[in-house]
Image (cartoon, rainbow, N blue to C red):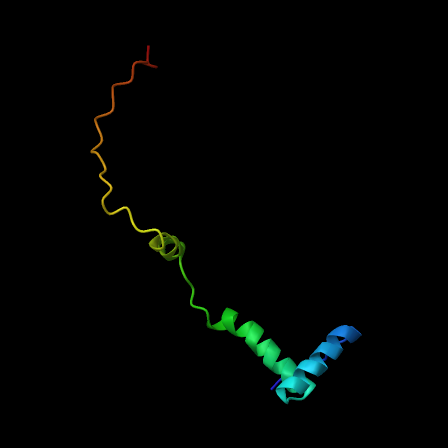
Length: 85
């Protein structure tokens, strides 16, 4: 296992860590490990989702346009301007 040293930690943060560790019955070191693990776990464990699935999930809340009728397209009109003249 690796080890890190955190330098220039301000006193307020250190005090908060000490209080939180005491409330949870952990050492400051264990509490810091737990915080880092919890903060980084979603980034490591989150499945990669493509943009189509994200859009689909967003619109599931309001419903799909299943009853939407899309009219067939008409033929495009001929161009009135001729550039070869």
